[in-house]
Length: 113
Length: 115
Image (cartoon, rainbow over all chains, first blue to last red; front, side, top):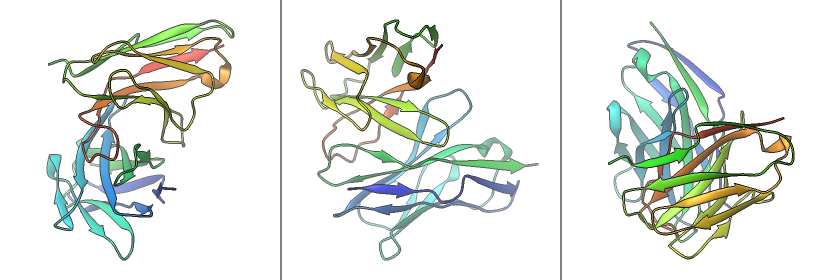
């Protein structure tokens, strides 16, 4: 069975500092990995995905994520945080050939001015 | 394009009442999904439809039924609402479902309270 873990319920960072939101996964085969963001009272928005190829994936709003197969991780990063990045972030995984997407529990990112 | 739309936005039901949540997408996507979001539990899949004419159970299907009315529309029905079904419900769609690498697009959600 596939699973994904987001070990931090909340991440606090000051504006202008780099941020990292952690995600680890477990699948039997090759993973398809996704990050989504949810702003208050809104649906989820797609940020980026890893399917194959370059381990560093760039996405929307200056976010990027690094796929690390040996550590089964897919951490979300941004070099310089903005207050407007404050939101709930979800990591999700799908095993290639498996039919559904499994989401983590989410990490709340709070960026202080 | 409106993307994925859901109605209603808010609903309060009494225990035992029934209701249908509506979802429509205008992106010509094959696959559609219903999730529920509860605090600290992330999103859990209720039902999905990989293509028009097919539906399958997800992780938490009990107490729900779905209908894929056509390619655009996918409805979720609660036949006899229970307080445990108090949640925020999201509909999503994607180009393909089974084993695909396409991202899902989400609607704005329906906040349901069952008293």
